[in-house]
Image (cartoon, rainbow, N blue to C red; front, side, top):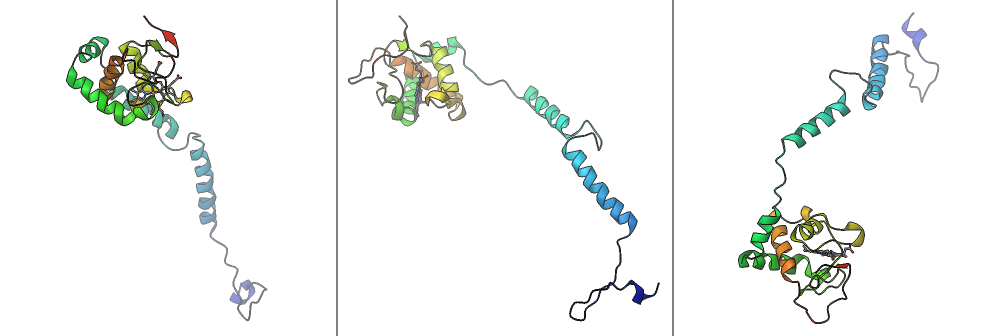
Length: 181
Ligand code: HEC
């Protein structure tokens, strides 16, 4: 074929082009990468190893297994803190900064319930208060403080909240939940 024969028929302002198809090996490689990417995306067993999803899950499981257990204070440790004036003072600071907006600075209750009476929605033992504060009650607007405060801040505010019982502040909200003697 002469150069002239391979000229494409059209003509743009006097410019003409040749028809030079890509080599077959190049085209095959091109389509192969597309097929590979689809199989890879859906984790359909191309490549080496167990596949990217299984590999990710194995890595996450290994990381979880090697992480140290969360440092949760035992009920006895909390009970000991409940008589420690330094811890109570630290808990008061945490309460005024983070909790007063919803529970009122004196704990009498505003958006959140009264924390000074002997009625509890989620239980009034130190362990139960600790759990409520850590996990929150998202559906009711109580934030999960475990994500926002340090473990010793949660401990301190827990014993501080427990110390508010019976303080009887003026204008407190009516009792909610179950009365615990
Ligand atoms: C954005 C508002 C808001 C903030 C801030 C907030 N709370 Fe609450 N809290 C609530 C609400 C609302 C409830 C009621 C949950 C329910 O009805 O189940 C609640 C419930 C509680 C309870 C359970 C009371 C019961 O009767 O069982 C405790 C304990 C508590 N909060 C402590 C805290 C502490 C400690 C902080 C600060 C670290 C805090 N809260 C900050 C809104 C808040």
